[in-house]
Length: 140
Image 1 (tube, rainbow, N blue to C red):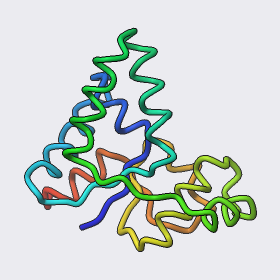
Image 2 (image 1 turned 90 degrees about the vertical axis):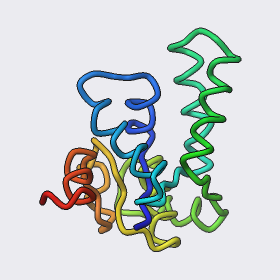
Image 3 (image 1 turned 135 degrees about the vertical axis):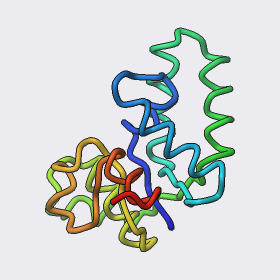
Image 4 (image 1 turned 120 degrees about the vertical axis):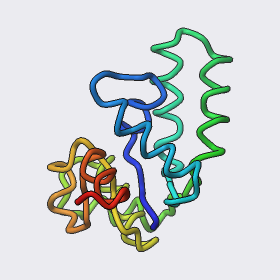
């Protein structure tokens, strides 16, 4: 199963943000155990780094955490076409519109996000981390 992880889920796991880190960590574990293929977009990487560096106040630690993230998540390119198509998307927020375009182009099963409402107009399966963990573990 191919899943695209929104920035907020990555940050929840890496910074242990309560109460969201449990399901985010479960998703990372599913990826580590090769139960799911986890992806992030290249456009998200710089923002993830920024949030890590800002919260940890340490450049080296932020880079180390990115390195560990790259062992669990594949990084998807964002094309010029994705960027242009996102401008005309029904998804109002450009960041979410861009992620939606990449997810559609790459035929993802789900976008995992705590901000599902932001993706609603993009007409792609978006579920919360808690919902996804239940599905992946077969409890739903």
